[in-house]
Length: 393
Image (tube, rainbow, N blue to C red; front, side):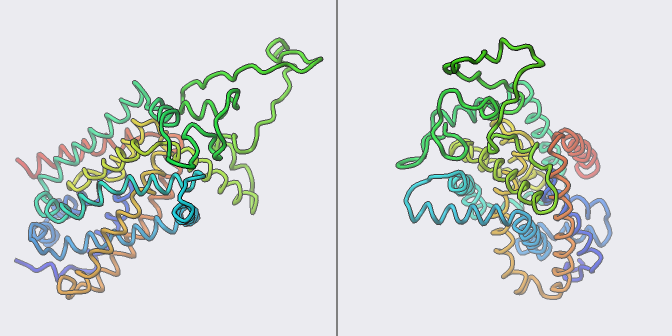
């Protein structure tokens, strides 16, 4: 059998391109790095056949490429990570959780615990057992079903109530604001802005009407005025939905973009510890070749009341430390005996993976502003079923 140490630069670059793209698209990178060489056959098929080995250089190569994707994600969201890390440090020093950055940081920690434990215990075993074309085809089909169910469940009963319920019932402990608080950390109060009320209810759900306040002398209640004479209401900047903030240009546009992301993070910080734990635990399914880490975490976010854009952002933030750890753990293998003869290929593949990862994160950040997981679900079902026919029968 031809040794995988003879992997060519062309193979390394192609696999790197595939891995970087499919790691962030909700279609499973491991499944595609198994199925693509198997479909090509010949010397490409040798790579996959050696994945069943307990000490597979190709497997180490694939997991090592994750490091490039993690670097891209960290760089793309570096301002967010600076705020999150600062929030974690200050919350530890002060022994309290006071703001959205601190809450979001601890949510990510909580959500990472299940997959971290499962990954350390089962990652190598699962990859060796299930990194086969027939198994990858089956799990890719299941991945498509998961994406379809997430969209269907969201349409029938969006999980907005879960977010609202978390805000209303969950406390972050001593000295921390209630999760029903204003996104800036101020206590919730009756008669809050209709925009904030709609945001709490979730996308597409009507928010509660504000409680009427006392009318000032000499004023006419707004609802009694003809529609054309209603005076414009001034909405505080922090209550403006983030999709309306990007009108600036130049330096102002950059500040507006940061305000946009900060508003999204305030919404994510209101998810609550238990839903975050549930969403994070969904990543364990990605240990099966063919199940997408981003796909299942987005699905978990959707059924818990996040919109597509917020679910994608939470998924990317949640995936970054997991992908980074997985790639870093394989670096010693690649610099040791498993990397003999393919060090140059590892570098070439990593550069290719970084390039397609950057494309993927930029593309998906725009795509999920208005679109859904349905096209990816259709693709996974079609590719999985065709591959099952090809490799299982």
